Image (cartoon, rainbow, N blue to C red; front, side, top):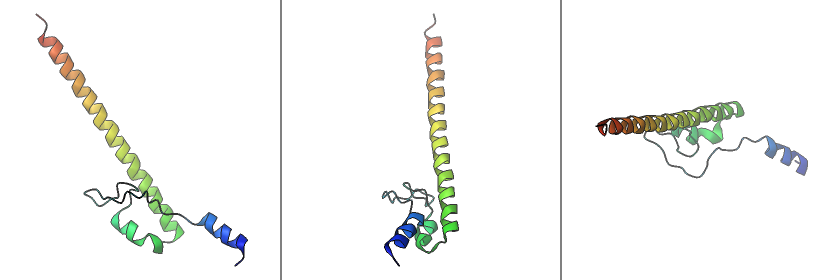
Length: 93
């Protein structure tokens, strides 16, 4: 293989989404890259199509986590608003 073909292979290689955090949540998904245990274990033996699918699933999991975080913030803000309104009503004489 010449130098040009080596560079082309590197361009098309699907890199691992690992972020170096390597800590699993209680369901077994990595908190850094959002892959399951099996997806992490079998990454090197997967086809490119399988890797693309795993990356798609990881993106979905990350979006779900972001939505849950926004929901928690929204719920917290709603609770604070209700508490403030209750306190203000309690101070009405």
